[in-house]
Length: 283
Image (cartoon, rainbow, N blue to C red; front, side):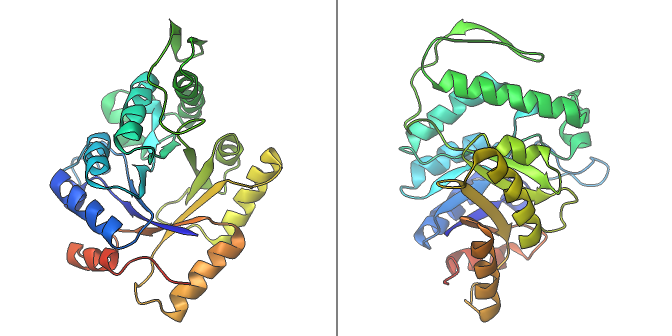
């Protein structure tokens, strides 16, 4: 099991200096990864207005200030991104970090403020189609070979993108999706990892729901060898019996990464920093 930090790009964390400071603390405390949400808006403007940071610029700064841990967006909503731009950004951060980037992707949420507010298509079926096409394009451009594409939503004339990613055969891709739906996990089986959330977030994913999702992934792949299974949750930082039982239950279900949720639904920022400094759970 590897351990990372899962952190929003808004609110208390909508400041790039704070994010870089936290990332350095995360690495010094012995965590294996630092993963940022990717939102433009989360709440309707009449409800709440918060500061946000662009996650890709933040990840570039973090890559330059850390040395060992993996990092990436979790998740970046490809249906509201230009896939060729993401392909360039990801390779740049991959090189800056000396091959430590993971690309987390999904259809994005919440659909009203993340898509409707900007005049983007918010229909779930359309977003899913765009996600699949974006993934085809990104992996094709990362090949470093001549590539063209004609899809329903995106078309590319033949072109070659260089440099190739630092990592071989390419930057790992983790696909997010909501349990208990099936389609996201059939998609995730095509790539390098899966990062499930509950379709009724903030309801948590349980080991039982993860088990069902992994059954879908495994039926598509044949096995889970070398495949990343990413779950998120909260531990106390005291290595209590309760914490150990929680981590053991995830390990037994097949999780390979546990990401500590560090966000405003949990505690004040000083308490969150204390949790980071206490380091990952010990099992």
